[in-house]
Image (cartoon, rainbow over all chains, first blue to last red; front, top):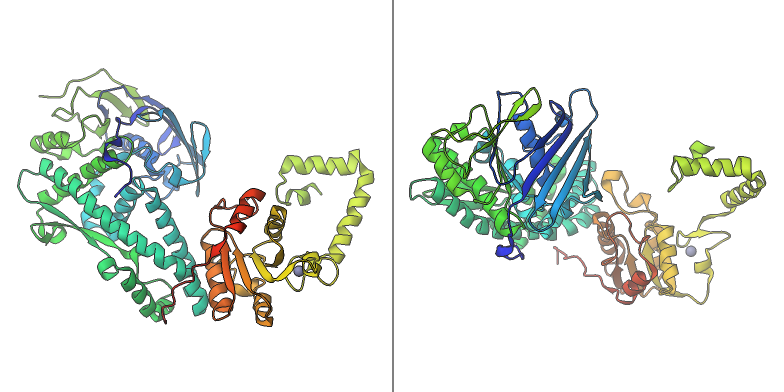
Length: 378
Length: 199
Ligand SMILES: [Zn+2]
């Protein structure tokens, strides 16, 4: 679906150093990451392991994988947080990412240059965060699944992101009109933007999900020992995701939209679902199958970024290794792209080999210390 | 005084301070002239009742100028946009200044814009082409659609649109240089009219 060639990947994105200021429970920290070694951030819960991973995850879309608000990211009693990440980018070379967070405001500089459009950096610094919350991709509300899809496609197709912005911009204005009870001509002036943007969005989602499905199948094959094939199905709000149906639906929902004061139908209500053996995975698959599926979704996202973006994403594994049995952990390493940098957290060093001895960083009360290298447990 | 100056567009704290000191301390003689010019402007300059441009007297200079083609009207959002098109030297017709664009979120509806007068002008006849030179964002485009649907539909008027290819994102026409604008005006294309679902 992307017009970038799939062999454009020239290497992994690597984090060299992270400097945090007033970020969550971390007043001030500078953490260096060794080159060519997987990193394990070790420590009891509540000390700041996940906070470090969360800060690194911000480089992809300036969004936390834990919250959509800025306020919880600010150290208690402070009004501004700073996240500086020194990276090695396979195409750009050494790059400094500097994000300043304040209430309701984000400011980004890349190599000292102000970045005013998120679209210009989306996909440049790919990371994929694995966390226990991922199960919500299966069990949670459609919003989380739409965000997963939107991020995956935005990071690899700049026109997807601009179409998405256009659609949501027109939707916001239209909803405001519906709340005011404005006349038809005014509403239709915004429909004229909403309709083509929505149709383009549905088309891109359909094509994107179809392409993503092959990465998912490959990832699931490597993670799950059985021969069952997962199926990724687009569940558009507009049946058939057709442009003409979309226009008719918007027309016939006009009265209801006015009554409810919001646009009730459209791709902003799209969803997708995972199926196994012809059944929806959510109610029918076993606990183990569901966990395998969401793991495969993230692995597939990493493959997707690597194939369609410019770099292998940094793998952020937040406290998930302890949950996997040794066999599954082994398959997880095997499923990941080998050159990718891995940064994991946990309360104990896991067994299994991620492809080299862990470099261990110990954390206590928001302070990070590099410990001596340790070999994985047998 | 410094506070008032700071509220002007483009002036920060420092430049407001410099201007205040310049007028009050360094060159107080200029203050009187400026004062006179400002109050003169405040009493005499108003909106042209025909097109919304700034004017002294009954009509603005452009509406008064017999050498300009009255049958071609360029619709712009603001007076600075009008001046930018004028500087390009590529347009010899009349203007219509809306003084904004539709934005329900910012509480701007058609009644807040110089929209009704545009309807009157089109109804008076004699206009053969309308060029919509509104900004290239959602609100600018929606305003084009609204004008098309409520004022232009069914009239025998050629509708063209420029704005595409101009720097988008905040600037509107103001930051387009003369060459870009000239190219945009020369290459202006017929506005692809919105699909009529009732047709
Ligand atoms: Zn005039």
